[in-house]
Length: 566
Image (tube, rainbow, N blue to C red; front, top):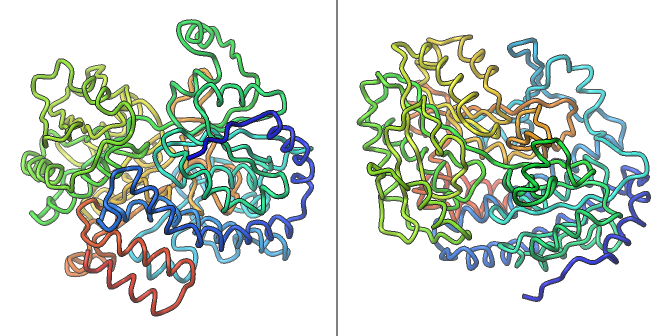
């Protein structure tokens, strides 16, 4: 593929168009967004095909479903949700009309964002998502601010340094900068997935024609030149904390010294989503064997989706020390990790990161014979300053620790403290609990969720689902600074353009249908298509995209039938 290096000409065009974009009426912004929709539909098949080829995935294998579900599908859903918000603003209506508001611990106001539309109630039956607003942001302020976003006076030029792993991240970040931050955008793709450049130019052609978007490729040096271009007024990064620190403070020991002294080299606003050490906490409860197997596969999906090259991946499994089913659950987890379909380790540096993860660990378990093997690190002491707790491995490596607690409440209290203090990052945490356990904990469970300092909390639902929900927010917990950036600064997505967001909380069914209904859970969702063991993920992803592109009862029926066979 021909590389298109960024140039000063690109930033000059953008600088000239920034004020025009900032002053553009909502109706015109909406028209441009609507123009991108058919273009996403037009490139979708090529997008998935090229992604599969780059990642070494069979184009008709179940794993290809991931490329639908993390590529064109969430981008199309976001465009639709954002267009609905802008339409309401254009017409003088409340974008939150009909939204359900709830009060959560600490007096927080929560806005339900799933289900939000009628179609959600069928497609995602049994799932719920809320955006919790920061304390002090009430319903009146949410309604007054929704749909308007931040529009800096005179606009600006933002460089988006795109992620290389999940292929919808970069275009979603472009749209967020345009519509929430009010800037024009130069997207510099990561070399890992810069093959997407011609497709994304097609998608954003209406914006490119007006000088509002430019898309370029290039190496780290090209990115460094861009962020330091005088025409650039802001930067958004998706990647690692190390990448952020290099951009803001400079590389090597000199950069580390500047960071320690609080003397950045880059004096521009920098927002970011930087991953971290994700946790999955399993609460004790009266699980049956089928529950153990299903939730083990749930954990395997949280680890092995995209072969572990995922900022939302679970890296540390936190188990109850005194749970009588702990050993049995671990056996099911080993089996789930071992039997999941093989995937190439396409992301650069995976072998080195896995080797560092197992270095000096005689008890490390290699669960397959792949070039970068699926790896379990059992029995980590929770009070140790272990590298698994402090370093994102970005590889198919899962660590296991156990905490004391004779009751679910005692264990949950310790688990919250452990996640908040021992693990690096604040992007997402997963809680898995039997419905009976949740009922017994009552309000104490929600209070524990409120104590977790994470941007997304998933309850019986992987946090990555929140990434794919257009009206949910995605990003770190608020409060990080450039010198202590953690999982990043700011949030993205948020198609309602809500002000003052703190986190997203997701809940899902403990069991899939039909066992959920037979066990007293009113949830009709089958085995999720993002499970790596799902046999029809490719078909379901393709059909789900087709239904979203052109909704109909017939297409919806085909989606549901495919999902039920997974």
